[in-house]
Length: 88
Image 1 (cartoon, rainbow, N blue to C red):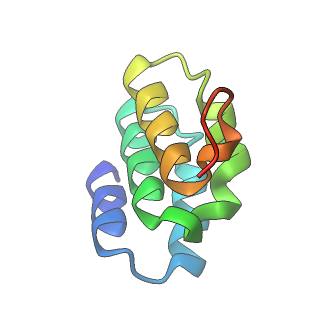
Image 2: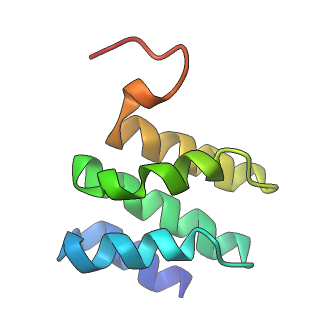
Image 3: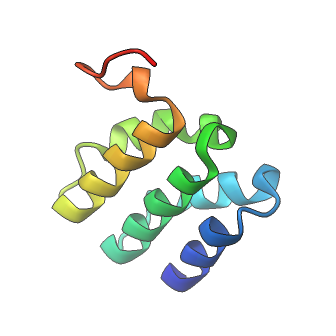
C-alpha cells in the first residue's frame, strides 16, 4: 500500500480518484502508509485541494516523519494554510 501511494504521487494520474484514496490513507494505522500518502498528495499540488483538511489534521500525527511530509504537502497544495507562511 505504501508503494502504491508513492506511485500514484509520482504518476499524478486521475486526481479525481487518486486524491480521495490517498486522503483516506492518511488515517491508516501504518505510519509508512500515512507518510507516503502525504508525500503523494503534495505531488498533486493544487489538484489535491480536497485533501487539505485531512492534511492539516495530519500535522499533529504521532510520527515525526508523517508530520514533516504533511507539512511539505500543504506547502505544495496551499501554503497560505500554514501559519507564518508568507503569501505567494
